[in-house]
Length: 262
Image (cartoon, rainbow, N blue to C red; front, side, top):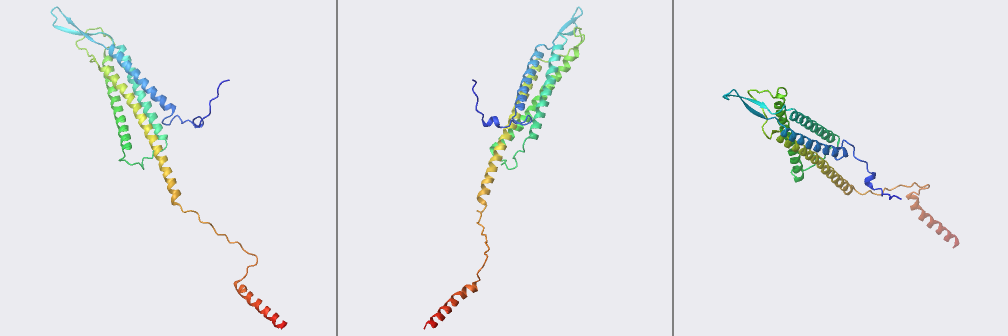
C-alpha cells in the first residue's frame, strides 16, 4: 500500500497567479533569461573564433602596391552575432515587460508610511536603482558592439576572396566583450527582479505589522461598554402620596377600635 502524505496548510493555500512576483512563471522566466544570456555569450565566442581576418598581398614585381584579402566570407560570425543581437533584445524586452505587468497587478506597496531615512528603505532603493541603470547600460554596450560586428562582417559577403585596396576587420576581443556584457545584462536583470520581489515582501510585512498595531490600539482606546438600564413597566403603580397616607389610616382605625372597647 502506498503511503499517503498528510495534507498541510501549504497544499490548501491557493498558488499565486502567473502575473505575480514570486510565482512559478516569474521564476521560470528568470531562469530562461539567464539561459538565453548564456546562449548569447556562447554565440559571441563562436563569432570571435570565426571572425574574418585579412592578409596583404603584393602586386607587381617590385611589391610597391599592396592589396588585402579576407580570410573568409564572414557568414558564420555574421549569423552568430545576428542571433545574439536579436535574442538579447527579445530577452530584455520580455523580462522587463513581465516585471512591469507583475508590479502593476501586485497589491500597492505600503511605501507612504515608510521612514525614508531607515536603512532597509535606503538599501532597497539603491539596489533597485543600481540594478536598473547597470542593466540597461550593459545591454546598450552589448548591442552596440554586436551592431558594429554585424556591419563590418556584412560588408564582404560577396567576392570576399577578391583583392582590394582596403579591408575593414573587427579588432580582436570585440565579440568576446559583447558576450561578457550580454551575460552581465541577464544577471543584473535577475538581480532587479529579486530586488522587486524583496521589496514587495518587506512591504507586506510592514503592512501586516501596521495593521496589527492599529487593531491593538483601537482595542485599548475604545471605552468599555456600559450596562444598559431597562425600565420594566408595572401594572398597578403606587403613588408616593398614597404610600404616605397608609400609616395614618391604619393608626386612626386602631384608635377607633380601642375607644369602642373601653
